[in-house]
Length: 386
Image (tube, rainbow, N blue to C red):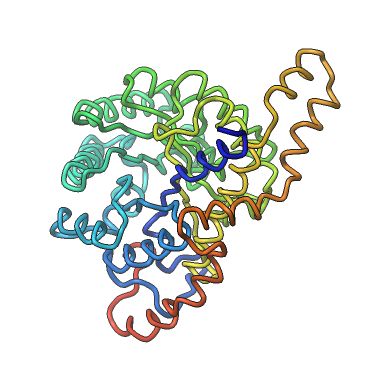
């Protein structure tokens, strides 16, 4: 197989999971801007996700968020997804939208609140059993706003205790993905603020616990690709939440703020053996002012382009330059791949997969946008808290 053929083959195996909540209304703490045609039910979210997969060919799974996507029959929901050509993916918990969680959830000083939070996480594992999902995604808003508000070490003890109970509930083939975020909504301490804290807990829990890297959850200037390389080296990178940030956790389209950073991350993924089913690539974005489905299609394409460029890096030339200490040549090898226009290559890949080479144009021609606006009238639009 030629090098180019190998790159094409790899790109055809890529899978980018889309999040159910990205298809609903979203916004900032100031305003949620409603859009016409937004899904009203989890089933309609899956219908939209199926269109993204139909036109990109690489978005075969959809992450659920509980209770936003709560239904009476999860097996039926999984069947609805399969009937439309997609499958249910990671189950995301929610321990941040209840009044009881004002002072935290799994780390709360009140044992009754901690019990409520852990019970919700166990419920999510049950949903995994019903849907066939393998990944439980955990993000905690837990933390404190003021010095002295709570015992920092004590909160870590509570976190470890709660995670251990949930970990023991995981079945064969299931795993726990622990996400971190350096601030917000807690402003003094956050209980899982960085990859080191997440890694320490996952290491103690065991092989079914791995770290999730949300590309928006870092301080300005953080070298995310170093984190990715280190977690891959330790066998503890479970997946990504892809998005872009300018200031904080902006949840903009992946690759919008810094496409070069996305390329650097994907190079470390390819270099470290992370371009595999063991590392989940998921979008975690809020399309507040742009149309939902086209934005998600564009995001998937952005990940594809960064991946294609990463796969085109001449590893032999780069290694030779690094061993020779040739700083400029090593950088030039990397930049040659980044500066390659991979859009023609990806058009060829899509055609070979039986897809339209231009997903955005194909979606516009499909009439789906007009159809959902006409049909989704009445009911409650999905959005924050829905």
